[in-house]
Length: 222
Ligand SMILES: [Zn+2]
Image 1 (cartoon, rainbow, N blue to C red):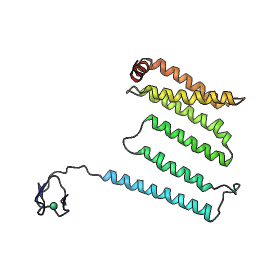
Image 2: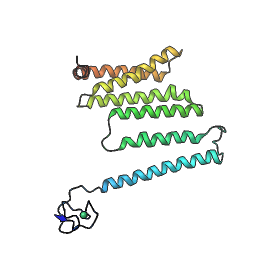
Image 3: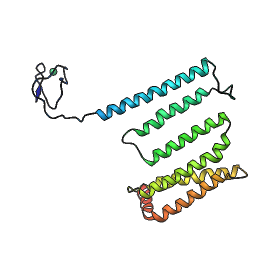
Image 4: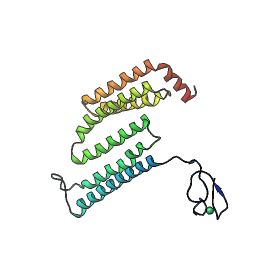
């Protein structure tokens, strides 16, 4: 046990300085109380690097755009740096946070997909390819998410099938209903997305039927 000559206290572990007065402790130390944090420090350094790069790109972009009036060819009136800033801020506060330890559920992946699709749609609106994104990219990505969620629902042992099923059904069916009533012709990718979501929903009910019923009973107390 180490001792502080000034505070007259005993301090366990292998601390070098007194936790009260910060003086050097005397005596022999014991085995360390706390784990070494080298891994965490490395991660923290990486995090700071990426944070610095994100801010640097954001500030340089704003400077080139607003101060030097540097515009993208073909878009003389577009403040491209604001779109870039939107992506960087969402990347920093939306995406990087998902990689912290202790996080990592299908719901977060789904949220990320929704956020990224929203950003893509906004970007596409300003660059004039919104229709391609809405008719093609969004339904393809949502179909991929539905399939991924289905796989996760199949391997999930904690009985959280409902969340996956609902997200699949919402992604596939609700946009399709909206499109059906607002557009004369439904884009083929949306039709595939809708069919896939219904097929996988039926598949999940067939394969996981009992756990779905159990989960409904558990969640709604019926
Ligand atoms: Zn002390």
